[in-house]
Structure formats: C-alpha cells, structure tokens
Image 1 (cartoon, one colour):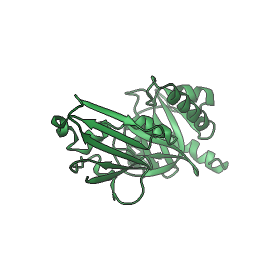
Image 2 (tube, one colour):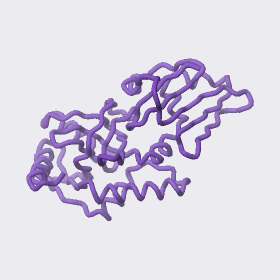
Image 3 (cartoon, rainbow, N blue to C red):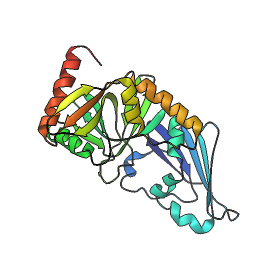
Image 4 (cartoon, rainbow, N blue to C red):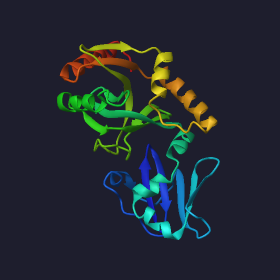
Length: 257
C-alpha cells in the first residue's frame, strides 16, 4: 500500500492507504519523508463488512486501524479526511502532549501562548506581536504543548481554525498568557492552582476516557509549576505588547527561564 507521513507535535505519523491522498494546504507543511521509523502507524482498509467506519487504537497508542466501507473511500482522498479518523487527543496524551486552544508565536523571548475564552483577543495579541515585536505567528487556534526531556515545548499544528496560520515549527515555551479584556493593561503572575483551573478549560480531552483525564491533570499540574503563567488584562493595541514585554524583560534580568 502507498505510504505518506506527517510530523505533528514532534511525532511522526505514517499513513498507509490504498491510494495516496492529496495534501490540503494547511496540512502540506507537515508532510515529511515516509521512510525511516515512525511513532504512530495508521492503516486504512476498505472492508465491505463495515457499514461506516471503525477505528481501533492499540493499547500503547502507536497503531491505528481504520476500516471503512469501500463506498466511503472518497472520505480519504485528502489528508484532512484521513486525520479526522485518528483519535489525536488520545495519541498525543499517550506521548505527554495535548492541544491547547491558543495563539502561538515565536517571539524574541521564546515561545508565547495566548489563551483564554473565544473572542477574548488571542489572535489580536498575536498579530500585535507580529507587527511590533518581530514575532512569527505559528498557529492561531490549536497549538500542541509537549513535555519533553529538554523541557516544555509548543508545536504548530494543521488545526488552525480560521486563522490561516499553520506553520510547522516548535519553540521552547517561555510563558503562557491568560488573556482578559480591560481598559488598562496589567500583567500578574497566576498562582499554580488558579492556572491549572484556567488552562484545563482550554484543553481538548475526551472526558469519557477517565485515564486520559487523569493523565492530562498530571501533565497540567507539572506544567503550571514549571512554566511561567501570566494574566494579561489588556487593550487591543501595542500598549498590551509593551506591558508584557516589560515583565518578560524583568524576569529575564532576574535569571528566570
């Protein structure tokens, strides 16, 4: 069977299908060479005994099998359709990773993640940093946060919502910024317990899978005790950028990483 491979969140996915799918524009940056080792092998099989599609995941979450009725082969003509059938949240958690609803930028200070409720201004703050602080917007909707040997990193992903930013790039996480709209700008350090509660609301997880929820809680507990979490009460203009920059510069001068 033909193979195609993707690198998402620092993991290599090898997909085997009867025919190679086309690469949608937001997924094309994540296509990599199919040869070599992989972290997750996904096989897609037409099967007349299946009425729709059935997905099986191995116990170690390193193999995925998708059986589908042959009449539904059109669903797998593009990589976007193929990825829909991979339980990505489950697989990421098995590898100490998760999706965070956030705008993710590479800044002069390192990776910054702006998160908060829909409409709070995540994309606005990311764009302000791009315009005024020589920063790159990597993802505008769902970044992947990963616990790795060298520390916590954030990865761009193909899941970009309507932002149009789906860059294959990763950065060490300098800080996570919880946004609130305000008439004046103010930056505060968020205590770990509060940061845990706030972040958990912005993370995708299958709540029917108790083990996954427990694992996610353990990961987030580690994260908020290591990575700086700030609250930015902000205006939708460059003053918000300046306020956060001032805090990050002071923290850097004090030796905080």
